[in-house]
Image (tube, rainbow, N blue to C red; front, side, top):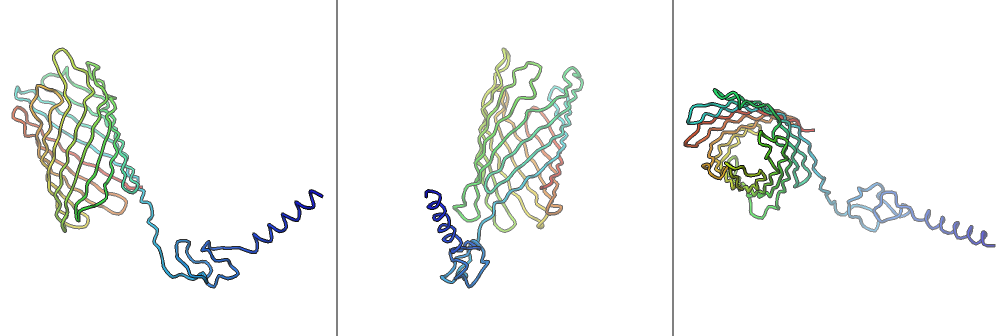
Length: 277
């Protein structure tokens, strides 16, 4: 008797379910739906016909692989010169307003005439996150950022530690012209030595850029920062940057930076190639 009752319940339930079938999930059963196969996001009337289309914002996900090379020369007032060549590989992942960045690099440096300071090693690995805030003022965009430098490079004194940084950046754009700036605070994790004391740093940058064509953008930037060495002067430089969009998938950049310190002369040249997956 129990199985008979269960069978009757299942049959009734099946009749109810199959009596109401809504193939396009618009809330109107197929028996009464006069407009079948309406998009899932559309608002419909009692007949299942569209009365208003509602757009769905798709998540924008972009993975970019960036390979770069940089050459710099550093000449101290005493006369010794250090030349450094570095190669880098960077992965940028963007999803909506969030951008994640992972960067590894390796460098080779040679010092003249102090060849005992020649070096060949990996630089610190950098992991960063940036979040773009909602736009509250027309043409103005703001972003918050943070990151960590993982000490792959230990140095001869083995005192290199984890560095943490936090940043705020903003830009103002009008037609083809843009003005931008940023502030970065870095908490230095390197351990002090008997003859060397480290400090946390504050860095500021200000610049302007111009879009010459939809594919070509260039900018000039002024940068000033505390040195991580407490007894050293501030670091100052001016740099030029150019971005060229080759196609929808790839782009290239060129950059040049000149140091403005009183006791040193430094120049840096860089090139990058990025591919969007």
